[in-house]
Image (cartoon, rainbow, N blue to C red):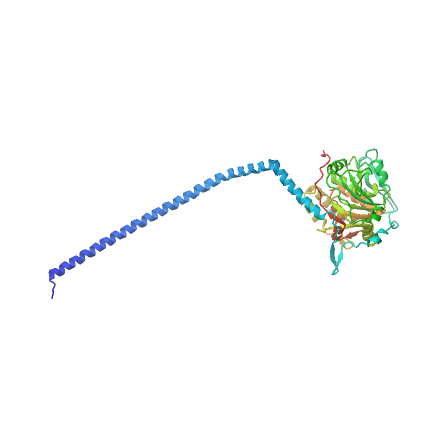
Length: 454
């Protein structure tokens, strides 16, 4: 057996104590090394964070410096593209191509639109069958409450200068009346037409009338008419010399009889107004003065193609309902004041001139949503169908005078004249009927003014 002595035990204790001390020292050294490593990592992380923050600041500074440079480069590139002829050729050809495609899809369409009426789908324009259309004849003239209507001749301005008192008496219907209605006295008084064309115009009993001044629009041939109607109706397009030149460049040349297709071209010289929109109101509103022997007229804006039989249209919109005047209801709004706001937003008139006109109407009692004969009085006037009675002639003269006094936007003045005169009861047909009457192709471009006022 083996026995340990006391000395051996002490030695063992010393060995154990020594080992324990070594372990503690080793542990202490380990803890110190870990603490040093942690401090190192913290310092490194702090340095890295500050370095990253500094780097980010540098990138932001570089980005801020680069932005103006990039902007300048983009502007230069854009200007280079704009000034490049190929850019103009490609962009203009793209626009023209889309316009041509749209026109080609609309031009010469004869389809009849329909709408629901009391739960029944009906054609928007109820025309007689073709055999009956061919047999239509003009009825006797409608009796008017005005026996004599005399036109005041002004010696200074084409549109005249009616006073506010004269304007007020225009709306007081009597058997004998005087009204300003365009034209002034003397040679070359404005809107001059040569003797050959005047002689032709005096032969017309029914007129389909359009005009283009300043070369603004193309000429679209009427469709949907019968041969019998074509022999009874004058199709007249009024041009100025600028339009004639632009149409000749497009290959539309006047024949020996001054016609292009069905249209008889009447050239107008010495247009009285700088604004071509005002010049266009003369044939639009004063057809009774241009065609002194005509009993009926149908006005069609130059942006549209007339696509129905004219005699059939007179029967459907005037004779059948017993009306002497027909015009389309406005498709979008019923309030003349909201219409004024829309006109200003579309830059079709200045805010100042619209405000003057509508403030005048408001002061004279024009309500916001004016009604007449149970429907809204606001109209869309691209198609006007009327009999030339003394009452409708008075109405058109008064409407023309409002357009000359205020803005050229005739939809603003129509409800005022209609409600103020309070005697004419028009057939204000649905917008769907207007679509049945014409193919709307849009204006080609805005005609520039003839000269700058002032």
